[in-house]
Structures are given as structure tokens and as C-alpha cells.
Image (cartoon, rainbow, N blue to C red):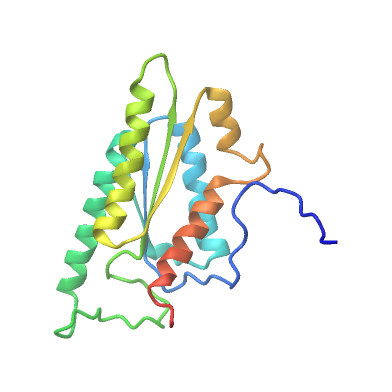
Length: 193
């Protein structure tokens, strides 16, 4: 008879060790619901640096007013980084001047973007419209650009749920999952098949 596994909420750990030391990652977060979003941002940043070895100089942070603006900001950051990467290319194929194996500041395109926000339901349908637009917008940006964009937007029914989901009250941290997903997705394009 097979052994029954217990359910654990959250993402299973990657099968291989993730080393983000050669990645360039952007984080764009909202200023709406800032106290909790700032906690989430700090945990994402800390996890990228301490657990996945992303160099602090290769993490770029930007802010927007609210969740609705996240997809456009992510798209603009991707396009700007790609444009600037082509300006620093040293061959006709557009290869960046910095070698992949060097562990120093990168100037090329972003390998992944993490969008962080928090939307709390109020008394109108505004919550549903914003959540739908942000969800589809972030997915569209990553499909259109080919750059992984993490959906780090908590959608909560009330303030108590927002506090619980922004911390470890439920036994895991969403922010750590977003950081891991960004590194894993960013490394995928370098994988040998």
C-alpha cells in the first residue's frame, strides 16, 4: 500500500539549486497599500540576494501608484532594458559586452520582472475590474515580450486577509515564492536541452 502524503500549501522547491548570480531582475511595486507592499518588496529583495545570490547591483526597483499601472511599467522597463542592451552590444548579433559567467553588474536586458501589489476589496465592483485587468495585463506583457513577469499581486477580500497573506501567518511567504519563480524562469533561457 502506498504512503499517503499530507497537503502542504505553496510551491514545491525546485529540483535543482537555483543560482541567480548572473541574472538581472527588475522589481516594480505599488505605493497603494504601501505598508504591506513594502513588507512584500523587502522579503522579495532579501530572498533574491540572500537565497538566490542575485547581486544587489543587478536588481532594479521602480514604483507605480497602484496595481492597474503594473503591467505598463513592467512593459516599459523591459523595452527600456532591451533598448539599452542593444546600445552596449559588441557584435552584430546583439550579444552584451559582459560575459555571462562574470559576477558583476549587468547592463543588458532584464531576465525577469516581479510585479508586487495588493488589492483589497471594497464595496463596489472596482476590485473585480482592477484584479482582472492586472492579471491579464501582466500575462500579456510576458507573452508579448518573452520576458518572465511574476504576478506578485495579492487580491484580498479584507484587511485581515491582506495582513495574513502578506506575512507568514499562513505558514509560507508569497514573496519568497515570487523571488524563486523569477530566478527559475530567468534561468530557463540559459538551460541546455
